[in-house]
Image 1: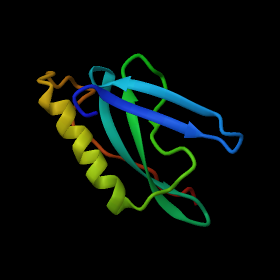
Image 2: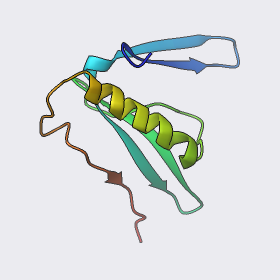
Image 3: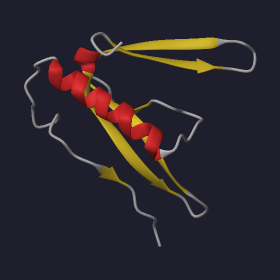
Image 4: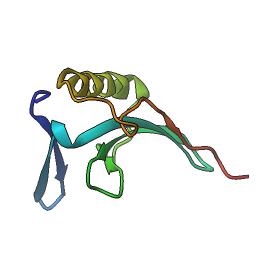
Length: 102
């Protein structure tokens, strides 16, 4: 629902479902993160949401390939830009990149 926002769902084995709706007006920026561990490297998609101290992970337990995440990220960027909300310093384009600790 790009004009309204993003609905995030977490499904549990007990059939419990937790849903959270994030209005498009509260999303400051979608962020692609490169996550590096001693064993693997993967990408994740997060949202910077106004009024929250932490990033909101879109896929908590899954690690979809970056070729799947990029179109979602681009669509979210376009939806935010199409709302005509002026870019503040927190909405400027940026990339968060993690590097391994040696």
